[in-house]
Length: 276
Image (tube, rainbow, N blue to C red):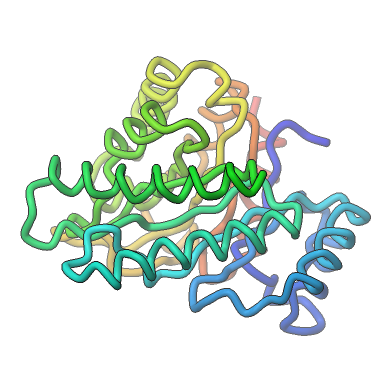
């Protein structure tokens, strides 16, 4: 298996059917190495189906990850919404683990009107409870808070790194397009390498050997992310990103979230393989 695998966020557009099984088959046919299961509208997969999907992915040599539902906010005002958020993440982790997925990615919270340090403490508390319950169940899947694209969302690079340092079993999902959209910067080779160095310095070399990366073209404004675009229709500097990943010998999964899904996954893979 290659050190760095590329694949789409969800079933490739060119798959014969809109099913996870057909998606895995198509990823393998395309010569890509991974696929993210998109549970963003809810987890609608049975345990039996999850086990079958895991078997198929192993047979095809396709590494899986999963994205938890969008309806998670560990800083919600109502306790029942926080509890429901925990249950959504737990349900995703349980099904994803049966699929053989390496990681579950999620958006942790919104700041609402609260100071970031207060929101951090809330997110940390809820996440610790989730991890504790998973470990009691014997579930060792990685839980990955994602760098968020909007300034209203919890999920700066510092925040996700700090959570990863303070909670065992938590490690970042770095969405480089989101971070670029949020900051208006972080779109050059020196900035990409600085990000990788920050992760290594805070979390150790093992973190670069186990990365989960999202990349896409992106449209953004003063409040951050507006929408995802195809790479070549955006200012996102994917060429320098893959060069930085190669130079730093990063290992793990790179997921294309561009609207064209597998096309940009192939573009990233081809660019990575051709850069010196």
